[in-house]
Image 1 (cartoon, helix red, strand yellow):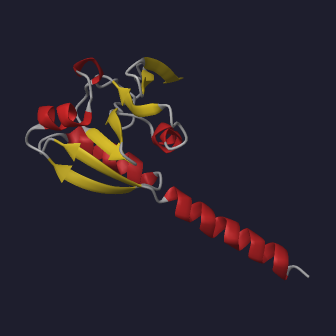
Image 2 (spheres, one colour):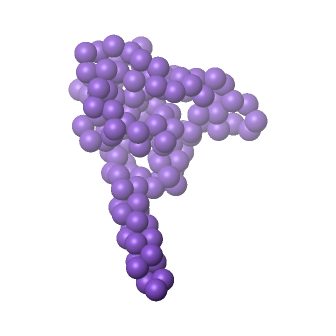
Length: 142
């Protein structure tokens, strides 16, 4: 009698795991420690990360359409969309559901954002979405 509900739960769990294993390419400077910490944050949250050590991050950002006002130290690419800086994994995951956005950014390097944890201090910051027509929109406040 319990076989069908258990089978259903098992299939739901497997489906959830499959959805959680999104792949993201991350481009970073070889000497940046916080980039490695952000990669670890993504991995800890179910992403498969392909790590690209890149000596010329300015060229990467320009190629991907990341405006200088949005720049941070590393740049990710997931499903053809950019993820600039210390964007929390939960927002990266939601990006797939936002057809109106070409990318997300956390400009600068706010203390307390994923990969920039430094004790108790946490600066307020915003996750900025960039629409397909190039307009900025606040996606989340932290």
